[in-house]
Length: 129
Image (cartoon, rainbow, N blue to C red; front, side):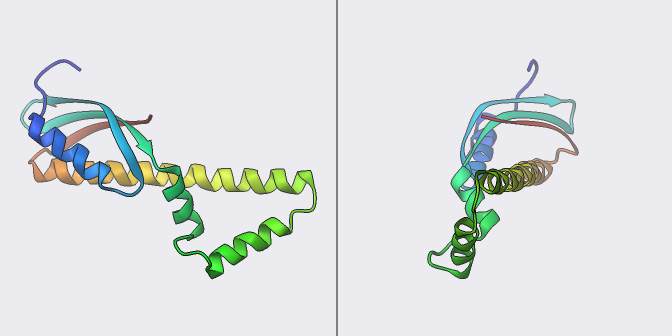
């Protein structure tokens, strides 16, 4: 990106805020650009915590729990390779949906902080690391 950037301290604050989230492991390759008085562009690569996302999807915060017992029962019910493949595909689809939701949630956090800094228009580009 070319042009004036956000102040380093503010960018560091945004990175710190995102990395404090249980779902985010780290933030990389951050680039910012201020366009005019009230418009900002923010680009970053986000490394997500796959385990935290999986725990959130399956509600597996405490083991043993009713949720972990249900998961074990589902796995015990796998009687064939086709059943196992189906189970993996369904869980991967749930993970993909959850990852998309988490990406949107992280973007919303950034928008909130940028709005508090008096920006009205945001161009946010978040990518998986």
